[in-house]
Amino acid sequence: MILTTTPGVEGRTVSEYLGIVTGEAILGANIFKDLFAGIRDIVGGRSGAYEEELRRAREIAFQELGAWAAQLGADAVIGVDLDYETVGQGGSMLMVTASGTAVRLG
Image 1 (spheres, rainbow, N blue to C red):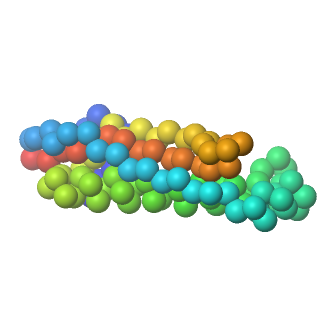
Image 2 (image 1 turned 30 degrees about the horizontal axis):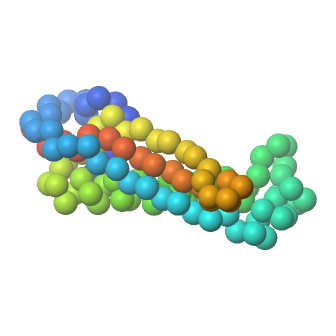
């Protein structure tokens, strides 16, 4: 499955638009990661624990996006957009949403 932020796939034509597809991931931040991120995980203003959670959530959202598109018979998802939000009590959870247009390519 081709996933791209561009409005098309270079060298290929869109033969059919199958609709908008999404993938979501909501992950709870581990309490111990939260506690120790401020103490030992921040190096140069960056938190490796949070960056890893972001990567994991993004990958889950991409997998769901591709799976939904595959169910529709798509070859690609174009115009992919990512959105990051914190949700839950006190922003205790991380939500990543990926959306785009499932298409068949000619």
